[in-house]
Image: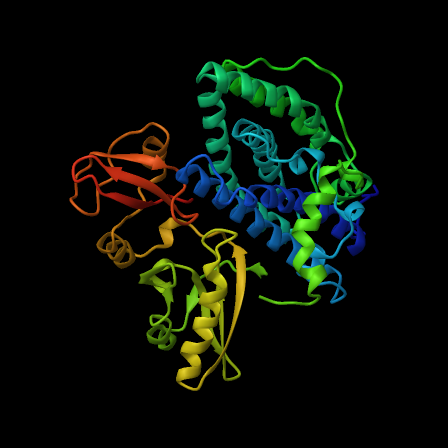
Amino acid sequence: MFLIKANFTMKNENKVQYIFGIADNALILGQRLSELCGHGPNLETDIAMTNMALDLLGQTRSYYQYAAQLTEGEKTEDDIAFLRTERQYKNVLLVEQPNRHFGYVITRQFFYDVFHLLFLRELENSTDSTLAAIAKKGIKEVSYHQRFSSDWMKRLGDGTKESHEKVQEAVDDLWRFTDELFHMTADDTLAVEHHIGIDVKTLKDRYYQIVSEILEEATLKVPETKWFQKGGKQGIHSEHMGYLLSDLQYMQRTYPNMKW
Amino acid sequence: MTIQLEQHIDPELIPILEEVHDPEIPVLSILDMGVVRTAKVLDNIVKVTITPTYSGCPAMDVIGDDIVHAFEKVNIKAEVSLVLAPAWTTDWITPRGRKALERYGIAAPLEAEADKEVLLGGKRIVKCPQCSSPNTKVISQFGSTACKALFQCDDCLEPFDYFKCLK
């Protein structure tokens, strides 16, 4: 009897791309939340959102440090964060959507948190011990994020007439970006074949189930639209991404190699 | 960034490590905080590994530098590296550390279940570090740092930080 076993390892360059697909979401969402520092609706919420930004940037650093190691000295974590061009970022469109009103920020966060937690709970079983360790650490943090955003969805949805309308409008607007979370890229497929990565398609049903339950509890309507937008995972971003990156990369571009 | 299953600290290094404190909670030594995973001497160099409380904890860089400086003072070269697994938990805060937190005005973490009841269910059991009354409520699930939540005591009316349970 022959035992056929995939004994080859994933090429570093593919693994780096796979890591970008995970980490860029955390970087870009963290950047969006950082923009709110000092602008939250009240002090507590302001602090909460910047704390979540900090968690996300911390996770990003762990992923990027690992990716930098895999480039064998060719790139540093700062190069990866600050010196790529727009098309080289592989985050989903959802996380780059701009901060509008508070309900919009919370809805974007909620849509991502539910996915993020499901994703990390799978990634912690990765055969890649570094990715598994980053995921284990992240789960503890992201559980808090999901609690926070779910709580606010309920408060706003089941709050005043105005808060209900605004958050429903945000749900309707951002819904079209949710399907992309479950698209597989070529590097995702490779990573799954090597038991390193997650088949995100398998998270989809559970995701919509959790999201729908919370929306219903928040007295919000689950959108029925079947039209979804995609592109971020291939590096084709919305018009907002360029502005975000010019802000994010400003210091490194203006003062190359500067250090804090 | 690697994985470090066992905690191992050479006893002779403890007095020096005890001198290093968490910059955000200065009453707590990094040993009481439970962030030091290993410390041992290899070829005349002290190798220390530390683990972050939260991924983005900005105190880690400072703690790393402070460890190097503490050993420099006694003419020992030290190298510090970061490990991520196993992930830090509030269980690693020592009993002495918990007391130091309370004295400093930060309520120490409860067990996971009770923590949930407090943060989500609004149960009033966290004791106010100022007046010891359990008549306290959550103001915000996130406090002055990622590891703490903001509380208020309804008896003495003082606001205070509660160290969130992390497991």
